[in-house]
Image (cartoon, rainbow, N blue to C red; front, side, top):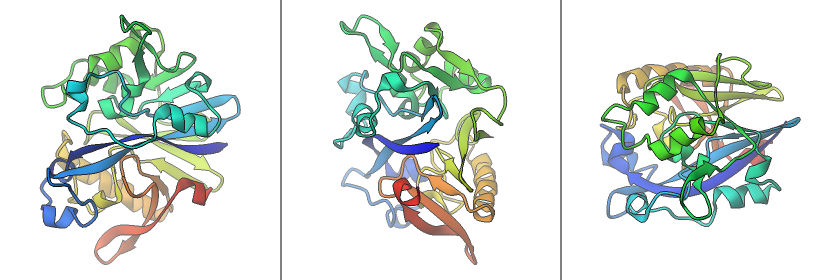
Length: 280
């Protein structure tokens, strides 16, 4: 098995929305904001080469949205999904499986693209199976008012219409050495991949733990649909991360790619940060 970090780009979100009820004086210590109260965030994916499978976990915001939509998110940076794949010797056509932790636009927007004359949508990963789960898919295609702006039909419905959609049937053995933890605080049935690599577990934290700044329990996103449930899920996850010495792969942390955590007298806190390539 070989693992690769795939940076799909960077965007900006309101710091208050990202940290909920936590005061700016506290969260800005780890995530300083600009004059508009916006913080920079990564859209970081993970690529797994295992035998004849090339699995991509999430794929960023994509490039098919119009300027009116994208101007709210201040996309920046030199990297992209395609350039990051190419840096490791791959292209979108090589990907065999696209595993979607959930269907918010910054996680699945790269799944679908325009055709050449922008008359219809087609699959970015034409040779891949796309993986979601039935509960989350139903939640996304019939969205509540709170999440409707995050579940964009053009990111989601073409996957099913093209025949590429598959649902995982269990949280275990989804792929070789690849399980998933189902959590429901951020959105219904978000899947958190756990990859067994050598003698370690690498966890793709997605929006259960967006950044190192979200490790303290009260630091919960305002975007979460059930913040009290997130508290419970995060506490349980972090306790296990300490016990089993997880390598936590951070999807949205602008500054840190991976981290470990430790138990302190103030609760679970950050231990070390590093790049995935340093660990491998």
